Length: 350
Ligand SMILES: NC(=O)c1ccc[n+]([C@@H]2O[C@H](COP(=O)([O-])OP(=O)(O)OC[C@H]3O[C@@H](n4cnc5c(N)ncnc54)[C@H](O)[C@@H]3O)[C@@H](O)[C@H]2O)c1
Ligand SMILES: [Zn+2]
Ligand SMILES: [Zn+2]
Image (cartoon, rainbow, N blue to C red):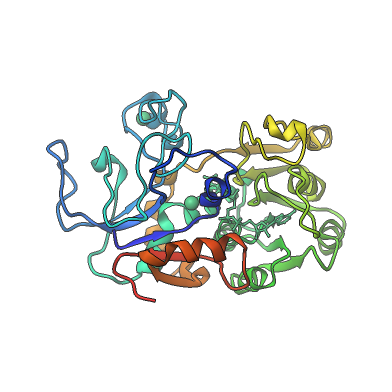
């Protein structure tokens, strides 16, 4: 392992909002250099520098053949489609916030990177959040000239903003209440909307002449909250349904879970999120959801990095050695000012 990032998704089990077996190793945003290969591996060689997609997939089942590595039918022994590293319900695979990582079906799963150490902090975003942000824009139907509203300026929302601009959107809004994150959204060419200061719906409707945006990306998830911090799992969805124009597209990459025993309401405890579906239906919105199939995008995004077109590392706030992971989780979980994206690595020093 050369780099493993802490992700907003890691906070779900960290906070006890998703249960994980004791002894499991965290870390699904992984990259490194191959130390050893098993007898079934032909393509990948010792010494290769590689990015590890967070989806762990067999490559030959029906869903993998259709490109949906996020819903592999073979990799997760529980029978649930989709497997990953170091995450609840995604199989028994230990994560990469460690010295070493075991990668099953390595020939299929690994993405080769140019040798050396160049672009390390950009390439490390290829395992999850850069493809996930891009996937949000794909589900939302972002294309040249479209207008886009992104809710959530965490790493995923910021990568969605970067992707929307790369895809030629004419206007991109990013909604959050964290000033440091909104400042990064501006650096990626988006218009920041601070929902602790203004009503985001009114702001976006005014800025689009009352028409609304063509595309919406939900990059918040089931812990969406209001400006006082009170959780309302339907809040970001409702606001997006409000600002996306009739027949527009909505990509929901923020995570919603089938059960959440610590949720704010009885309904949400059972994964039932009551959002404005009637309004969404009446508008004829197209809604896409789910885990990102990283392999569908990571090659192209890697090449944008190599050619100097994409700069996902702008969001990195901290690079720390592995043995400071405990403190890093604490700061990141409190969403302390300036703790946007933390990279861990056995070889890194504080
Ligand atoms: N679909 C996938 O494949 C995939 C992959 C990675 C992460 N995710 C999920 O994407 C989501 C975002 O990940 P992240 O790492 O950026 O998380 P994060 O927790 O760092 O960011 C979420 C942001 O949303 C903001 N927010 C909260 N309520 C809001 C509201 N009502 N309106 C606007 N913004 C609001 C928070 O202030 C925070 O900045 C999480 O749910 C994560 O689990 C999904
Ligand atoms: Zn992640
Ligand atoms: Zn498969």
